[in-house]
Image (cartoon, rainbow, N blue to C red; front, side, top):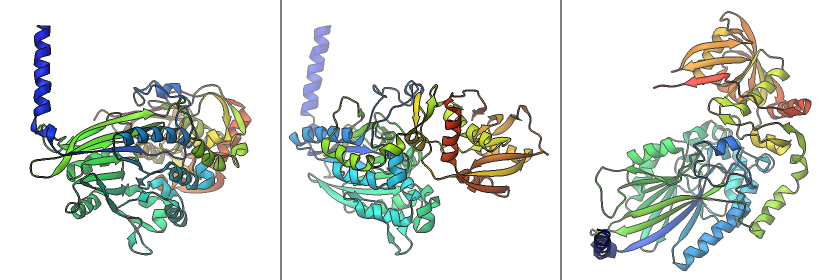
Length: 507
């Protein structure tokens, strides 16, 4: 029986080798991709709790990973191997390279662009966090960038022209590949968006750009800083797009995903849109290998693909040239950001709803301003805090924004509305939200009194959209400096995993 099975396998292989599609005209392309690096040009580590969770499942190395000098070595090795096989390689970045570390605070994206230029990126787009800069700084970053930037849904109001090229067309063997970019509509609410740049909705912009490209190219690739959910919607509503290389949502998609164009199975076509994204901070390098094939009508399509995430592990040596570029930016600021502020007795990270890093910030604001409670928007804390010495650089990575501390007054009824609508991180409050209904809430250990007025504290970003109509006062005190002072005074801080915020959704 075993010999018979082997015989059947041999016959099947020979038949596949002789099949018509195997002899079809083909072309290969490999896309190496990064997204949401957020200033992480030096190696970093994930907390043990995050590494043991689902998000990083399968990541073999999670301590001392990443760093653009190591990434450059890995990229160079892959390019050399593919050059031997005459396979073209594109290196692309999907934006949000700023806002995240001391590099971002000091250089506003310039250090990142200089390093990516030196590595030899081919194409990219911008993210909403580049728009956290002034419009003048965004223009400077664009002017500095040596690789091609594409974005089809952002217009400069001062010129009525696209911020950058909407798309480019490149040849891969005999295949004409059109590449266009998109940025999340959220960018319109960021400083540079408010100041100068109009950002249109992603799907109409995709439709319009694809309609323009359709008669000029064979394959369409989208560089999308719009998030995984939006990428899936675009793939459904604009199925002419063959590949979406994504960012913004920090999604880790180890093997890529396919949005089917139809349920029909085709022998020589993926029959769908391939979506890839490489999580965050470039701890892994995304790699997408594509094989294009020409069908009997002469039309090119994606015949097959392979997507993977390659760890930028500590055994990869740094590229000396790129390390020198990083050093030029790091050495002038290393002393300031290497200053030790205090000690962490444990890891401050998120374990489901129990978010110790948010609890730390909320507690620091509430205690520092002697408030009854504090609220913090989710997404406002950008990194965990690891056990051991805490440097100023660690705290900047945790809070890379320029938010100030806002004090305000709110009745119990108004607090209920804030909790129900925004489900924020808190201090001084314990609450349970189930299916968007507030079923339990206490403040200072006592039931919340709807008619009583309480003293609250938060950050300026959250206050700007969540506290409209309330009496607020901007203290002018930077949130980050408040946290630094708080930790200095404590000396050693311990993470609180106390179930103060429980959010349950069953629908």
